[in-house]
Amino acid sequence: MTDQIHRRDFLKTAGVSAGLVAVGAKTLGAAEPPPAPAVTPGAFLSAPAVNGKTYDIAVVGAGAFGGWTAYWARKLGASVVLIDAYGPGNSRSTSGDETRGVRSSYGDRPPPQGEQWMQWANRSIQRWKAWDDEWGRDLKMRLFVTTGDFTFRSEWENFTKTTRDLFVKNGVKHESVDVEIVKKEFPQFDLRGITACLYETEAGVVRARRSTQCVAEVFQKMGGDVVVARAYPGPLEGGKIGSLVLNNHETVKAQTYIFALGPWMGKTFPGLMGPRMRQPIGRVCYFATPHGDSRFEYPNMPSFNFPGTTGWPTLPFDSRGLRVRGGGGGGGGGGGRGGGGGGGTQSPLPPVPPGQQVVGGPEQDPDLSDRYVDPLTVERARAFLAERIPLMKDQPLNETRACHYEQSSSRNFVIDRHPDIANAWIAGGGNAEAFKQGPVIGEYIARRALNKDLEPQLAAGFRIPADTYEGIIAPAPASRAVNGSSGNGEAGFDD
Image 1 (cartoon, rainbow, N blue to C red):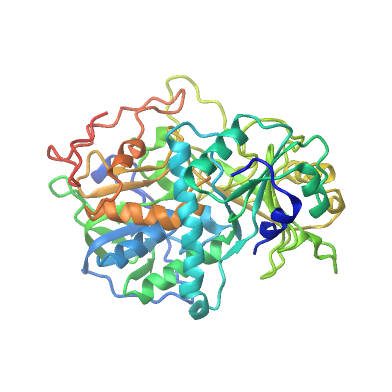
Image 2 (image 1 turned 180 degrees about the vertical axis):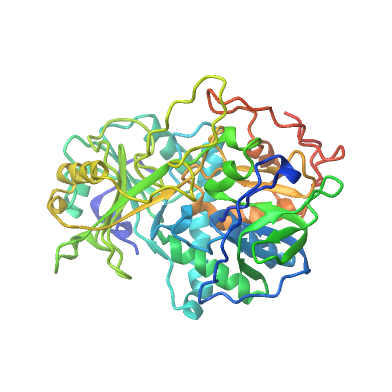
């Protein structure tokens, strides 16, 4: 594929269309949780009778990791229950925002992680489209929109060069477009100082909160059970979880338990995952587009990635507005993925005193944190608009969103057996990049748990990390082997 294309060729492609599980002191050594109030399921959820039932798999947490894992485990023939304290797509969850960008530009990630994430993200794009083809009519809901995505930089630096090389190697559809062509076709952007324009043809935007709910709905149609309740593991029996106790006093039994807890992971397993997870808050802004002006709406504008900032046009489904995440730059300089794919401007984390273990405070506690967008975040977003999309700089702020996301100390997904519980899996560490890959991540987790792994070479990269965040003291994970074997055909889990 050539680095530059002609305007006529470019025009052919441009514009194409968890809940908390508090672990009791008698089971895993954490503090005893306070009583939790009952939660009423959402209107689209039934209230299945689960008391005393035994499932093949119980998934705790109905976000991008958990919902897709439950779906795929059921698709692979397992009996499955999906449990979430607040329900799929709730406002406390990482998956609770309205939209998420889906792109596969990971040239800033170290090998082999960058290429592996690119492959999964690209496969997920195809699966998002296939989902709409299969379920869109029944659900009366289109989830994925192909906007195409531009990465803009002042020059072809390491991130854009590596991303382009990986695109070529993996057959990801893309174009290196002359900046003068982009200026003519998308005058909405002010591209002064920009010379590198990398366009990913099939990238797009997915409706985040609604897709999480749709996956749960389809999972139910397939015979799975969805329960909105808080779950507490019962006493360990022979090194295994015997059952989960719900806050309505029902019990759920399963052969295997998968904890896909998102930002609740460190709080739930404070000794094991607390020092290996951070859960900052991401904040985004939606700006109302001018009345009668469709230049900032899909399909007339692509999604975009400037240094420090990402965003996309308003979508026709609900017209929430042009979305801006970040706003720390836009000047076209070097450096990675701009605003990234998941949250927003990160809240600064307080320093950790040496030798002290900190599992988080109100700012990092997804049950206690305030979900607000501060004036400084809005100011930065407006500064970006003034610089790069100037016709939008004075438009009213239509909506804001704030959500936690979790960062692992390995900077990679964590998909691994619990080192001390033979029938429990840890699935998390999205690092603001997991939502887009959910359709593929879910299958991978389900296959691992069901001993049907098709990609065993990836397991080592997803281990519970040995490293902890600086200044947090915690014991290293025990050997991951369970009774001398990992149970899925791999020869041990030793570091």
